[in-house]
Amino acid sequence: MRVVVLETAKQVNEFAADVVCALIGLRQQQHQPTILGLATGGTPLGLYSELITRHQSGKISFSNVDTFNLDEYVGVAPSSPCSYHYYMLENLFRHVDIDLTRTHVPQTYDVDLSESASRFERQIEQAGGIDLQILGIGVDGHIGFNEIGSSLGSRTRVKTLTHQTRSDNARYFESLEHVPRTALTMGIATILESQSILLMAHGAGKAQTIRNTIEGPITASVPASALQLHPDVTIVLDEAAASSLSNKEYYLESERNRGLLSRSS
Image (cartoon, rainbow, N blue to C red; front, side, top):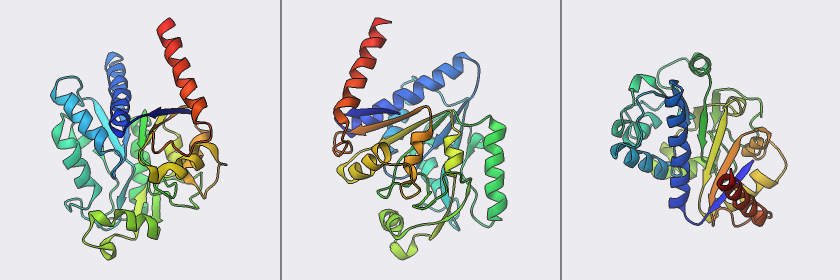
């Protein structure tokens, strides 16, 4: 697990954009599509803004990119401003040259949810798997909508949202009562099958959760701790989010050595 600590949230966004752009560039050279797993919420907004800027300046094309989003609220129409379909369209897709038929957000409105979950898993498999999964993290350690107690072997399915999660997301709705109580989410096992994973976090409110994720035991009580099992995870943090890490100086030293090795090679 690579832990990158930067000074500001802006630097976190730029680092994440560098990772995404490098992957797309590499896959273009290989004449292969890039399969991205995408997250929603407040954390990745800065990343998406940075990617839009780079696209508009001609530095990146999404013309050969497929995307799979982590989750969607149950019962919210795709056209609703509260849906993650709408979120992705407004915050990334309509600003870049991506083919919308190659974007996938779980279907949860007026469908058989079990079949929808199975179909989503099949679509990921048919695409060849996710090359890079972008993640945020909830204050209780959830990734996607894999709430506390989620099986580390879980697949895409319906999950009940905790009161904490619903309260955190209430700002996107008319009131807490309007926040859906369930969502369809990619499972932890599905996330762990991604070739690589990039988790972003900023702000002091995530500091203890980040410590539990990186330095605590692997437990369903902190779903993100399952990332310790993956061979290629990068966690990029601003100073505030990294403030509770016991081994922060070691992570900083590791990055300095990485830079030295890169320059000498």
